Image (cartoon, rainbow, N blue to C red; front, side, top):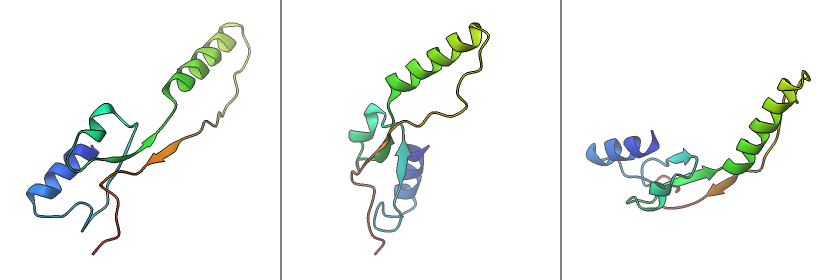
Length: 85
C-alpha cells in the first residue's frame, strides 16, 4: 500500500517526504530498494510465528492461550520521513 501511495504521489507531483511523509509496515525487502527508500515498521516475524504455534498447541491441549502478546517493533527511518516544507 505504501509503495503504491508513493508512486501515486510522485506521479501527481506530491513530494515525498517534502509534502507528505509515508511509513510502511513489515519492512519488506523492497522497502530499501525504492527511490525514495521507504521508512517502515519492522516486526519480529519469527517470534510472531513461534507465538502463533505455541498458541495453537495450547489450544490443541484444551487450554486457553494468552489473549495478548507484546513483541518489540522498530521504526526503520529511511527517505520517506521528513518535516513538511
